[in-house]
Length: 165
Length: 352
Image (cartoon, rainbow over all chains, first blue to last red; front, side, top):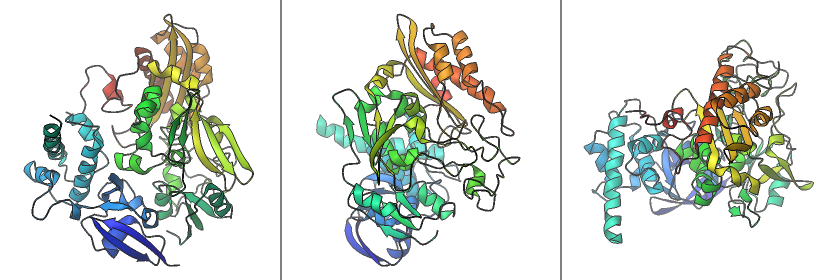
């Protein structure tokens, strides 16, 4: 059976034909659209390496059937920088050593962008750690990750405060 | 993962018709089902994708004070609905103690109710499991079973129900609305999940094609909001299933407990309402002595199903602590570590 779905990925509308209904959003991104920034760690929803934003919400792409995402807007790590200008979360991960090997980093960054957008954690380190608990880092860069998320959250909140002042 | 036929119905009636065929399964977010299919534990012939069904993603606060939650409402959206969290704080806390933020953003209310056990032998297709394959036997008996059931288990199955959400729901008399080929009906959530007996593969009271369309909480449940908590013991602080959990709620009138609600998670194949303990608490002045007696009553029928006798004493202590927390009053905001014993000890700082 052949299927066709329409997705907006990193701002670009894509029509994707699928010859198999079993394809996950993760496999569609990596193997059909060749966006390999999104990583396949456990492929079972346990590690968070595949985190992307779908319609603005962070989810595990490995546990999302591609066919179910028909019509969705997807944001991956490839879509967060503006040209050479890093997203504030990317810059903060570099500034705070929020990684070593880097395999979990795209998922960490997408999760952090989602967390900041959710607006529940603020600058409370305990809430940030809990809010990032769906992303495992085998290098153990958690301290740097927490600092990076808090700093990026402050930077992203600052323009909003100025506008509201 | 086995190959399957994919159907995306446009209405509830179409969905029920498509799912009434043998081998069909409903797909909502898929956070549990796709995992089970990847491991070969579930092998549906047809997936009926519910994600586009209209009208099932609403939270309606009804004029009579009850709330009706559509089956496709996401776990995170329910937990962060301000009016819902104010009225049912223990449910919000339970939701936020479960899974990870990514999973809560996707997972639905209906899917949470129907998630499968995380028994390692159910998950390992090389092991014997009566739930996966009726009559195959149970390798959890005599295996690694320190996490398994201490209440309501049978020789055929000692698995537990993994949901946090269901525990305060069953304490607060939640009702599920079901549509099926014979029309619409409703039942108490407490009656939805079955104990294993000789048929552990029959996990719920649903018939083939039955679709949970909504969950309702009665208006009376709101009266527990000032004294309602969920407490969850796990082997790590975040992103883990419960070893043992408890939802506790009171009305306190003139310093005495008017009505009490108590349910346990992680101890049985269903969320476990502890009515005998509620009876012990009703009319008493809150305090550790009566909490201790309530905990004894809640676990009176418990027995180990393997290397898990410790869970019985752990469950008593979790009940006592949950009751003490509920008596102390619902916090203004869900703690940074939802349902964690670390955040409930005054002044405790965890993870620093």
